[in-house]
Every structure is written in C-alpha cells, then in structure tokens.
Image (tube, rainbow, N blue to C red; front, side):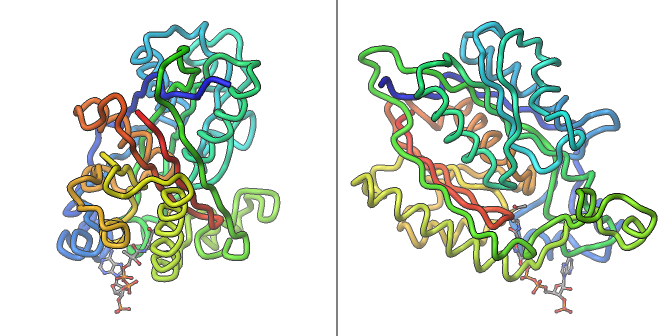
Length: 328
Ligand code: ACO
C-alpha cells in the first residue's frame, strides 16, 4: 500500500489574547509565577459565538487550501476534541456542514490532549483500506468554556484554538509519509484530569452546577510526573523501534502544555531545545489543537522541509499518550 502523507496544514486561533497580567486581575496570580512554572505568557480566548466547530472549520478550510484540494476531495472528517459544541451530533458533522464537504464520513474521537495523534492514526488506518482518498483531521478546543475562572491552579494553563491537516496517499515513487505510530492509554488514572459533570454520570442539574462539576479538574503535580514519564517513553520507543537516532530528527513538535515538561523531554532524548517547535508562550495548552497548530506554524515558518524526519509527541487526560514519526 502507498504511504499516508500530510498534504496540507491549517490553523485558526481567536483574536483576543488574555495575558498573564490580565489573569492576575481575575485570580491571585502573577506573570512571574505563571511564566516560570509553565513558559506561558498569554493564551487566546474564543469570542462569543466562536465554538470548536467554527474554529475547526476555519482551520480545516486553510488546510484543504494548503493541500491544493477542494472540499469535494475530502471523504473522511475526524475531529479530536474534549470541548465539542454539544454532546451530539459530533463536532465533525458540524464542521463538515460549515465547510461544505458534500461526501464524507464524519465523527469525533476523544483522547483529550493526545487527540490529534489518535485521529491521525485512526484516519491513516481508514486511508490504508483504500476505500478513501483524503481525510481532514482537526483538533479543535474551546477550553475557556470548561475552565473554572476561580481556580488559579488550572485557569492559567489553557487556551482556545484549532489546527488541521489533510492526510492522503503518496504519489507512486514519492518517498515520504507517516513512518509509525505509538499510542497508549491508562484508564486507571482517569480522575487525575477530568471534567466530572455534563455527561450521563452527572447530568446538568442545579446541584451539579452549584458544586462546579462542569469544570476541568486537575491534580497538577501528578499529571506533571506522568507526563514526563509517558512522553519520554513514547518518544524513545518509537525511535528505537524504527531504528531512528535522535540526531536524525530535524524537528520535534511536542504537545504544548508546560515548558518544563518539554525541557525534560529534550534532556531525555539528548535533543537540543532549539530543535523543538514551541509556541506555548502565545497559546498555552490548547489540548487536541496544540500539535496541529504547532505543526502548521512550523511548516509555514519553513522549519519543516521535504524529506525531514519529524517527531510528534503528546500526553493528555485518560491518561492517554502517543508519538508519531513521519518523513515530511
Ligand atoms: N498563581 C500563583 N500561585 C499558584 C498558582 C497560580 N496560578 N497556581 C498554584 N499556585 C500556588 C499553589 O497554591 C501552591 O501554593 P502553596 O504552596 O501555598 O500550597 C504553590 O503555588 C505551588 O503549587 P504546585 O501545584 O506545587 O505548583 P507546581 O510547581 O506543581 O506547578 C503546574 C503547577 C504548573 C500546574 C504543574 O504541576 C504542571 O504544569 N502540571 C502539569 C499540568 C499539565 O500539563 N496538564 C495538562 C495535561 S494535558 C490534557 O489532557 C488537558
């Protein structure tokens, strides 16, 4: 079978920037605390009326254009999100309608911050059947809608945005594409990072709202330790199993959650931090949107050249984690 390649990328981030100083007027925090612990300076916040599907559609339109394709060429739409517009229908169906993709199968996958690497493997698997030509995969999040703006331990970390890629088949003789995936999960750590309310276990009620059950809850230090461990492991394993030396990597695009987590990955892999693409200072943690926004910005900034070997690596709630190795 022909290999699966990234044909194009696109991203969209809302206009409104919320700086650390702005946040210090909402909760008891400071630019110094946030920046030294996380590397984040500001994050984007969706305007009223902007949702995961509107941002996702904008990123998707840009990715289709960047791939030199039109909506008619897309036959799979997969969205990774933990902040869908609504429980159903899927955000992917809403995106399909907004872009005007006439013939596609559309569905969501939920793997929190690892969402983009999960949808990449799912879409690549569908393309490998030979039944589909091109897949539009989108990570889109409006995390501001589930943040507790009275909890300084979480609200300073996250932001809104969307990133997308079009996956398709390599032309005969084209020597590039996805080399391998390595995904993992551990559901025994589900309550380290979760939004307890809003599903069927705790449906919306005056009590659930009063108890702040519809907000993101996180045990930050435990998540930090797990993130360092599983991201390192996912990266080391995929390199070893494919006989790729860390030296050969032209660029690492990590999930943009915390600079200290990325620094530890850099030390563990012995890859200088200059070879990591970083934008978390501008956007904070945008969950499933983080890797595709970074990938798009890296591509447009000329950081990725045809033939380069690049590594994507993520972790998130679930717990979930993953790595993807590809020849750009
Ligand atoms: N401003 C000022 N002080 C704060 C803030 C804040 N925003 N938040 C917490 N503090 C205080 C705490 O209350 C605590 O005070 P105390 O010592 O008086 O109790 C002190 O700062 C230290 O808090 P810690 O939690 O120990 O701080 P830590 O160094 O662990 O940093 C952080 C916290 C940044 C959350 C870190 O643990 C982290 O990044 N964890 C990983 C989080 C992450 O990446 N999550 C995303 C997962 S991906 C997904 O699926 C969404």
